[in-house]
Length: 114
Length: 113
Image 1 (cartoon, each protein chain N blue to C red):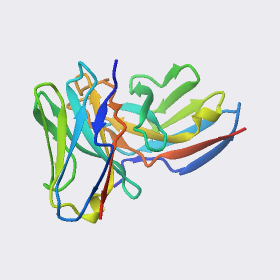
Image 2 (image 1 turned 30 degrees about the vertical axis):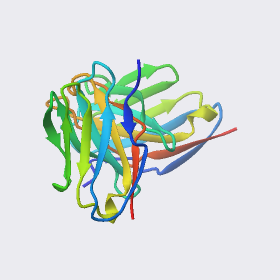
Image 3 (image 1 turned 90 degrees about the horizontal axis):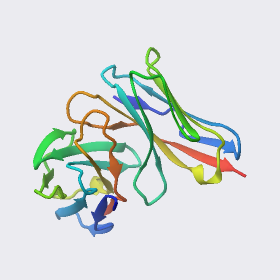
Image 4 (image 1 turned 180 degrees about the vertical axis):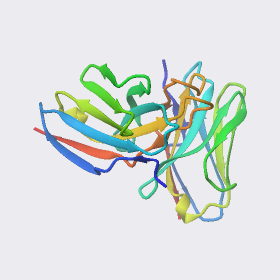
């Protein structure tokens, strides 16, 4: 079974631009979560989608948004990029995103903001 | 407010010996815990999990112990192998509602030959 895939793997943007990252979950998984990893803050939860609905959201500004499509693929968007948005963005999928589900992570998208 | 803490940023262990990684949590709502391993330039890989109804879970060389009263869990790797060198993250979640993992800062484990 193919794992979680994320595109692109690397991205360089400048301040003020916007960016869209894509995530394809494991086949059959309906929940997709997004996390940001930075050296200072570690791994932090951004948001979670299930059946095209955002069910849970972390403490990030409104510049960070996402969506999920009917095939469970998900995208996240960051508008008006800031230098501090430079990070590894990780997507994880699970079957239902509840209870004893295990989240499986993709390889991440490394975003550099100049 | 860091709800999940891994107080040791790094750990060095000799090959063949036991590696013990520790994790503490403060939120009593957490009742499901997971360990992930991460290599550079890759996403975290799931290792093992435990729910609060258990105090121990084993999978091959990996064992996780949970002490609910102390709000402490540990991951034991026996015997340690060079391929175990990686960063290990502890994560916690509440079983109620949509799952939202809260991660510790990670411990870099180095296995020396």
